Length: 314
Image 1 (cartoon, rainbow, N blue to C red):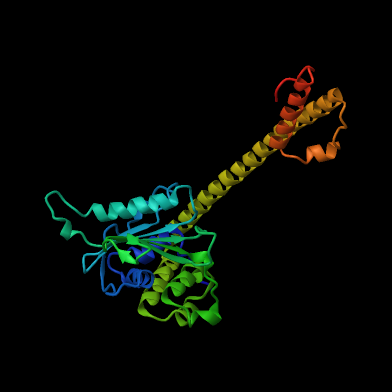
Image 2: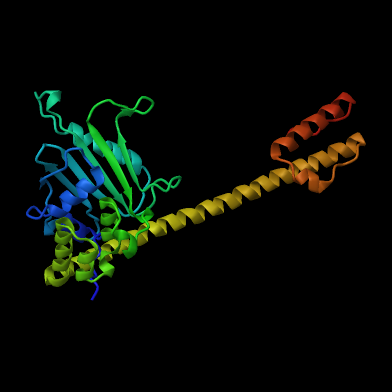
């Protein structure tokens, strides 16, 4: 029977990666994404999994903060949708994670590197096929880092093209993407074969616990529904915005067509007054509003120069 637990549902995500006593999965995910020269050995979760934080079924909770044995700070979040201002928000919270370390009277030398990881279920950068981006304070022209201060990593999960045949040769971050996207579709034993390693074994075992434990399964089902309703509301808002945009475009098109018709009529009238041949109407309508306005001005000047009455300006 398939596992049936989606790791991207907030309850499952937080329990798999945010337990105080089980941190192998989190350490594995952090090392896979950050690829630090000094790998993370152990971490302390600063906002550990707690049933109470999921009591409000209207709020989606997908954020894990941790600190490793070397003193480095980490924040991992799952973004179900790409919302307006997301890039700026990521930069803001990365700065906050770095600056909030310093207490009154402490020296700047006590600041430790801070890392923000954003796992995305939608595409953030549509102009590239690259799924993983690393941002840091650096002079890009000279490849010089200002300070080992903070980094922001974005991982667009849906850009990874993974299947059973390729997962054996996949990188660690690709394996985690596979787990997050498809774990619910596989039987636990088969998933263990595809994703060997203690970090994945712990993640799979936690997912099994959620499936088998009545309290966990009820909470998971509740949160999955809340998440589905949240995504439905977001998509509904997007659809409404698209419809309003199309209607606004149609209104603008109608208004532009009206102005175009008025200008074409003026040109035809001015040509008749000047006794000049009128340009083909279809040709006139193919011109831009700026071109039509310029023609009106030119014809009005010609009429004035002949002593005639100029039509009103456009």
